[in-house]
Length: 172
Image (cartoon, rainbow, N blue to C red; front, side, top):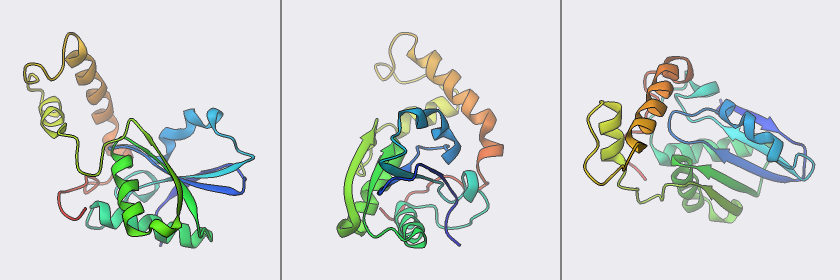
């Protein structure tokens, strides 16, 4: 069974969209007014453990996400398509590019994390566990804003993701 997704548009150019951590395909609804629905068909992909794929069990690694995305593209009849990746979704789309470069027409990263990592894991851990951020990592009121953002996001996690919906280390 392919991963869940949300489709927008009917155009000939196919685009698979990868969200960031804790996100689901529903998060893209606000951005669709910027999408050209006549020129492009967008499919907002849900990783295992998130959104419409909340109940799908798995390894929760980027290699698996790449395989899942290819399986979804195959089920849609997409031979060649483009990718958009937001935040951690950019790392996921880079892994897809490494898995099937001949199938990718173009890529766009939106505030993307590189596949090699960003070094942000420490600050995310500190924010999620309400520890003060290390000196120099977040300045001024940024720490308060980040804590509030993460707190709101964490309150919504039970409805948005399954218990295994975190990417674990391993694989690409």
